[in-house]
Image (tube, rainbow over all chains, first blue to last red; front, side, top):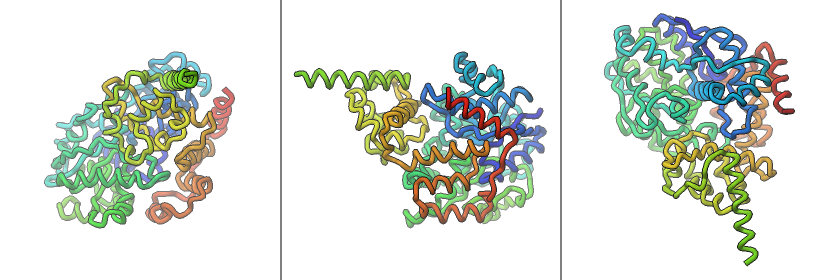
Length: 289
Length: 184
């Protein structure tokens, strides 16, 4: 089956490696990501104020144009997923706003699209047991910490993604790849989000807590689903090091990069040069590349 | 005596306004502090989320709308997820930011407001966010040229930030949608 695919701005720039690995892996797993034509930015935050319709226009336009092409839309970036899924829900539940927004964007979208995350395709359509059978290079001995962040999970009534405090989908995925899953208490904590621009100290502190907690519990690599989180917990490691002298860096990978290794892709196609902390020494040590 | 009555009056109107704008029943808060305990940015706020609700109940409008707290909230929704009274403080924070802008109260965390503006401008321009031009725009607005200069250069050198923005077809459509919505 093919899926309509909304990449999002960051996957064309800062997180090309996320986009490329996901596309390549999907072909190996028997489905294709069909990119939406002429997509715009999703707006990057779901407006919480009840009267802010403007921020809903970009995701609404994306949904309406996706519905013209098919019935299931998928994303990789956790932020885009959050914004698009919640907007879709609003279209299903609030007729008045739906009509107003349709009028603004000159479309007639009724909310009848299914929005799924790539991880959900792996779990529900491919299936973790089947994924395990197709792994060519099991990540045996790699201690990986799944970092969910906020956007996949919250608000849980609207996202309907996983348990609000103890999610398991990411763990199931890593186990299917043969990795050793590291439990750590900060796996659903916020990375500080856009504060990394306005108030960098806030984001550095958040990242320090998350990475410190993962390492204390034995992680060798932190796995992410979100380019925003990855910016804060990967690139901010240079700032953390300046502030906390005893801090040791740890590689942060997108989950699709690990999937790529496990599916036997050549490591030169996995975009490790875009990762701030070089994961190659670790992966070589484990015999995975 | 008169002044006491007056305080109560203004107090209620701010509480009512905040309730109406956010759609959250702020009277239900009994100060269990779960919101503040889970908040990633609370250690940096001048007023913690639980105190903010109490201050709204007491009608301390200027202090609430002038706080750094409303600008440090990143809508991670941990507070709302854990509130036993189902008060979604993330929604409240968004409503308070709007009220602050409408009242002309300058953002205590000025740079965050400027970043939001630079971001929207970037979408208006090309349909997609282009980090390099957006960050230059932000730097010009905030006049803060040195912070993040080195990480920015590193990103650039690693090929993470392309030099030129990619424009989508249908930019006219985006422009029209923005204009229509701004007029309302």
